[in-house]
Image (tube, rainbow over all chains, first blue to last red; front, side, top):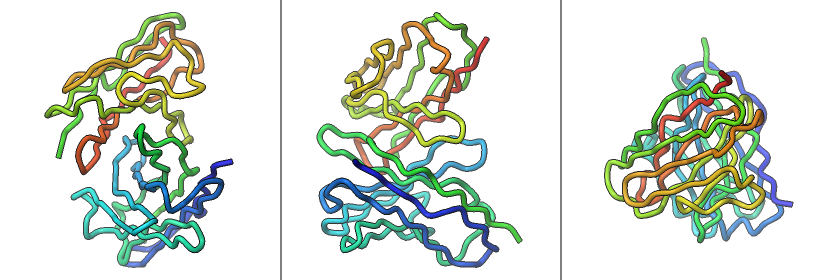
Length: 119
Length: 107
């Protein structure tokens, strides 16, 4: 069974660092892109970026380039989304999702991680 | 970046109604578009990919059409479980982009 299990909710202060995980199981982690999607409170979905764990090829939305780092550890089938210095505006739910690839779509999603950044 | 303009942003409809949601791309994206449904507190779910292909397990009352810049998601007969927010996503060109979403509410 394909599963993406994400980190639990986080409460952080502005300026703190954070690394979220997305643990994959039930499929070949190195053969599928894993994407990250942000949803700010009461707002729509925003595509942040995507990584191919097989070779760590990573693409970012310009809106998030330089603000976050997407990485993956194929030895433990886990993708990561990290910040070095959080802002209050990073408060959101973050989803990871598997990109199927030919045909192309996000078919499996993690349960989402709520990140709250507040002083 | 390709902009996806989704309309309407919300609509009220009754059970049994036919509902149409549109997405317009700022440039041609062939048929590189998917439709996702999101219910409150839940992750999105895939409905349609490649603009018009119904994902496995999705009821046949959902259909998609379009190519190039104009796309449509149609629910032929709205059911109680269809009240949700719907998003289009283009994957033709990086950065991939979602439409703003359409909230389908009960009339």
